[in-house]
Length: 203
Image (tube, rainbow, N blue to C red):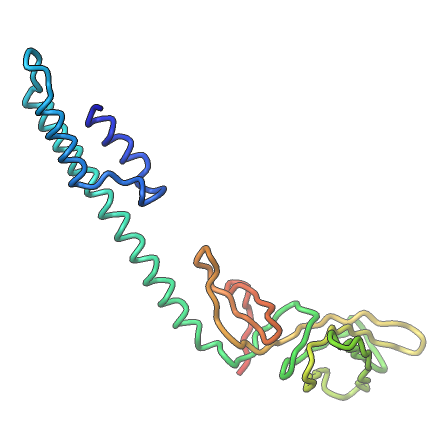
């Protein structure tokens, strides 16, 4: 086997699987074997020998770079998780239609209204209940139930139905990191969003 072929293979695969590495010790063994069993009528030229050693250095450097990158990745992931841990217990704005205890619903009717109705459907029992907000009252609803609920909202003006935009501020229960190293905020019911999608934060 040609040492150059081994070095080329190690170089190409250095960023795929660590198990495919030809480490320095293995490389030297192959090089010694090549020198030991070379054709005496066509011995390895000095410049070729130096070329093989140069490839050994390149392979070792690639291994060191890969190890450094992996270490930096772990450090950055851990550091980012610590930075975002300040979100724990706070409310972040989402477009979710689910609420758990402590979450707040902010309502914006598309036009004038008389009342706004908040409809909650318990995800555990299927029970449905309504809360009516009269005009002049704050258009904020805080959920204090124990079970997660699905929420929908509509307004009325006389017999006319008014469309309402909603924004749910959910309480962050923990910070998580997925398999790709991306950080997520996780809510009480297990749902989550990536931190880059967090636009607003309340105490």
